[in-house]
Length: 395
Image 1 (cartoon, rainbow, N blue to C red):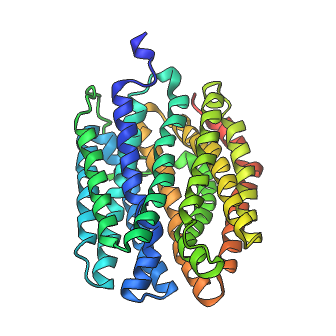
Image 2 (cartoon, helix red, strand yellow):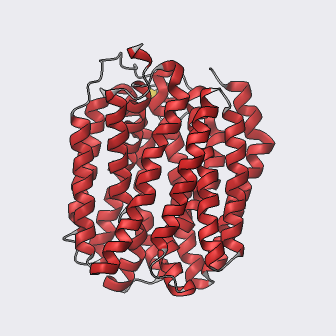
């Protein structure tokens, strides 16, 4: 039946727009430490502070974006957020100082944070209910592909031209294409969730899925490690491993791992194997970050990329399904925003702490601390979070 098609027209559109969102964002992100160092002479801890600004604003906006997505027409919220996200890429072309770049990067986190929540919530809305978990798994492939392909292209442009403005322009163009795709969405009107108040104030559960706090705490641990590694990977490879042309290959291998596990994991989610997928992902990711921290050579560098990709590809869609299954359908936006709030919290801490540790100790120290954060999330998941989800899931 037509209503049961997974890859319907609206799903394809939000999938493609999400790819453009992450492509435009990730084509520049791994190059920013090099850009700040080469253009503005920023130190490692200054770089960490500057780049953490986007994570801070993304973190602050996440709970409110879930509220707006659930309380107002979702397409309107999506287009406003996506339009601002695309527009701010143009600011990088005119940033003439470290301060102006810091302001732009910090402002950019707000529409980035809101757009990811709005786009993923719309994607869940347009999926047939009996294929939602499977669809969430495949939806993640869009940002996995964007996250993997974009850094490779960005690094190639940098190596061939050393022209950062050209890379910033590419980000602006691809983000604009994603915005245009979402303009063509056809979404059925839905009842808007009334604002609940407690003692005259808006209830806190309209901003955060309070029931999902254990899952959120696990995500903070996993994203902390990812924030450290993904932010400093290019400058670490160049300065300490002598790898000047292989950073793109790192993200390509990460992508292969993500895609492989997403494809396998989507079938598992379709059969309801949420806990199994999450458990496999947590264990594999744990060993991936251990390899990266322990082996400071090309084998550890590239091997860890593939292993971490395998782990995250299993883990993230399973955890997103957990959040969705802990919330009523009227709070899908809140569930998504809670997941992304937790993710951005860990990434932001990782960026700041990673820069400080690299400046005053070493990159090796930063990556060992990143692994410890991941290990803490893994332990808490197996000790408490699994049983919490089993007990409180609604479907």
